[in-house]
Length: 391
Ligand code: COA
Image 1 (cartoon, rainbow, N blue to C red):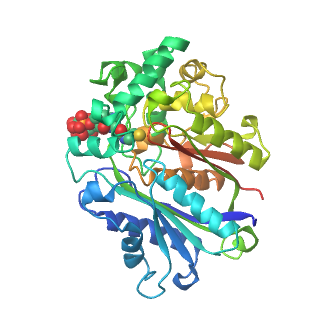
Image 2 (image 1 turned 120 degrees about the vertical axis):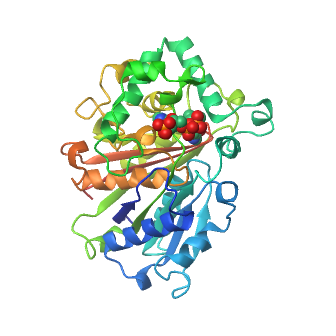
């Protein structure tokens, strides 16, 4: 296996992008990453594009070919292989992993990993139904379970088992909005209070509107190369120290404990083993906070806090920038928004910006090691990556 580095990154603005199509955002991200990496179109060997549900959101399938067609002549001039990767909300994380494996194995040298989703062209009912397809349609969807509903059950059980409170859940959203204020790509750049979260309308008890990530358009891309040639393109390559992926049962009812996402537990454990690091070594982590309870489960399942202590840690400020471990310095899915196929790549872009020291007012001081954690569905898939600015 060869060591791998990221040499370019770009995230579009996330939000309700009425004036842009799926292809517009994907191409903006791809071209932005290529320019950031200083690579020429003819040097690119392959592309992987994370996209969850182009068919349901905009009536477009065959996304790999679509993006290559419109990005820097990758299809028309260079005819590179371009592959769509789908794993629900973890599509981006898995696209990145495919790119890393392609470069690490020696199969390709310069590979783009991108993610894109356009969710706001259909109404809320359509979005909820498309997202519900990431759960078990026969055992969960058919009973009326939606994603907020499934995570509400996880939250309710976490509260029952560990005494986690609504205020503790709310503190996750408050912290992520505080961080998102300083992120120019974030969908929501406003501060909120615990009281506002607790007074926002109920979506699926105990989760309220401000416990939820929103519905979002956006795209992101990175360029991956062998570490040995990275300095040919940039003075600040970001090295991939670990890439892992794990699976779990698709429906919640089959889990040993619905307040624990075993895919996160295993992907995290394998990533730490691969990087020869422990949670104490990580300076910040971008976790998949599709709902506030998801961030609490993630920081426990990845080993940053003991099981059941995530709510207390969040409320006490341990997860703020400057706290024990900075969690979601970007603002996370809550404040940045969650264009499902793009999120895993946007998390990697945040790792790149932070590790290069380019994150402005949300900069984690002296960051050396970053982790990203991207979950598909209610935890049937999880991708974890560790990055560093030192080889
Ligand atoms: N956080 C903060 N504000 C939000 C928000 C959120 N998550 N979602 C919507 N809003 C705001 C909108 O900006 C809008 O504000 P405005 O009136 O000032 O313009 C207002 O709330 C109403 O927005 P609307 O789009 O009508 O909300 P909705 O009720 O249709 O949808 C949710 C709200 C929570 C149901 C929707 O965002 C949702 O389904 N989120 C979860 C997505 C999901 O499951 N992702 C996959 C996870 S694995």
